Length: 584
Image (cartoon, rainbow, N blue to C red; front, side, top):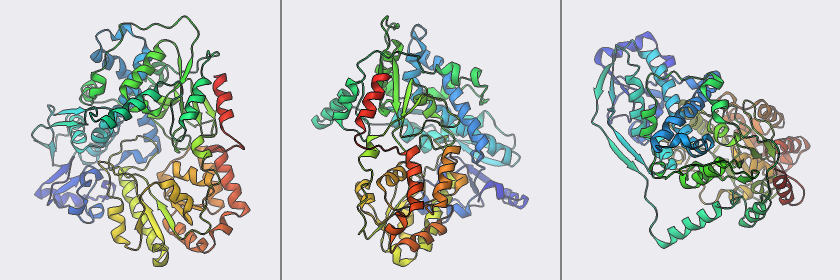
């Protein structure tokens, strides 16, 4: 039950005392005595609370409002950029002697992740206190002296941004600084948590790590969907001076609070919150005494998205930038250029000298030097569907984090609860005959997430679990169903797989350009706004999906979508890359 649906009569339950739970819901808790700050209170404990989605009261979710989300993303970007000098000073006593591009490149991928969590949780704290601040709630808090140790940036994402203990602590700090007089505190014992394994010691693990680090030294490292041969060839194309205007965006002048006016107006000093999330990988780095721009003209290298999770690699990129050289990032997933609000992507990747896309050249609300290129990951499966005689329907889902950790245009945690229920409505409308021909593909297991296949499949025992590599199954299926946009959607359209799409439009805000493409897909009968409509379409075309899919209207819509989101060219894509790279 969402807080928005509460009436004054609900406060009658408070006569017996109500506890507002910020962390995991205690066993045996009842809706009359315990309210939930969010769906994460039940993550990992859903089996102990049947029908918790409908029985318990939940705090409001302010980021369902697109304008609030857009403002929050800008506030997180400003908070990150404004905090960089203080964070650098904590890590290096001579930080002021090193140029700004060094610290921006080194710290931003981690700092924006932390800033997103701070701003998102602050939005929730304000909404909770506004809705319930007058009620006599008991709130168990974690004390300030809890300690968290994350090995690297990825560990922070998994166990900090998606971790119960860290989020309980973060909410406790923000709430204590914004405490309603009517509430009562219950201080819990302090926690000390450490996450992440150390460097592998076995020979196989060390060899794999060495090979990974070696290829990251290339001017064009091997990116997802590319071969090592392509990485070497494209690296040779970068052996030249990068003439022309530098399109890199100085972060303070572009995203800082002075430049944008965005200010989260936090009720406390954010620096201790950042420091609590500081990974060991950053603490252990040693920094150069000084870095100056080289006298010779700048050069360009392409950065791997490993920069988000590998501090040592990112430091090499930081030194490169500090010497006056340039960076280029390349799109590595399907949501780029589609989602209406982006936070970390704009700050880390779009802000560099160039950004290679899968076909689009504009992302509304974001600035960048966008360069459309045919991506090898798409090229290798273009037109490769081979399921004309396939016998199975493949349904692919996406992640369902119980914490709002993205700060992008993505369903909120409570909206993801509804997103999961839509799967149930789809299969019920699909009917038993097609259920027995269906495989369901869940997302990877993540901490702090809602149950996926373990929630769905017991409700529909005829549906089977899809395991193993996804791409071969997608190319062999008779019909593909997706309840979200993203990489799989673009790969399917490029491969010409008969595909049915459905999701609630308002829950997945897209750019105007992508909305126009969605309209095309809707008119062609590919995209639907409800699970029931999508199931009806699946039943309608099941006997002969090829005739439907190869109709002129469907193929025109597919090609229009691919032209802007999954660019394909005749012949090899390699010349397009080499010619572009030699001119950058």
